[in-house]
Image (cartoon, rainbow, N blue to C red; front, side, top):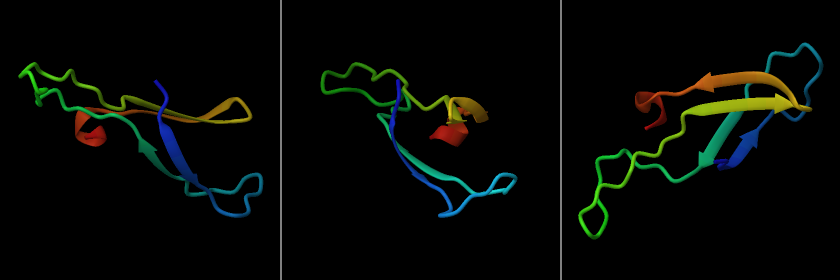
Length: 70
């Protein structure tokens, strides 16, 4: 499931530059500890994987765990 994201990059980037990329993702996140109105547990739903691609080429990937994603 993809999330809505805001990505911030420097205004100018040249080949070989080391840059900072800032990302903010809006997504439904549930820890698995909350319950709904009927008292049933809401299943855990967290961001587990992030991939960044440039022109279809994978340039960065990360596997996230609950302490990071939550």
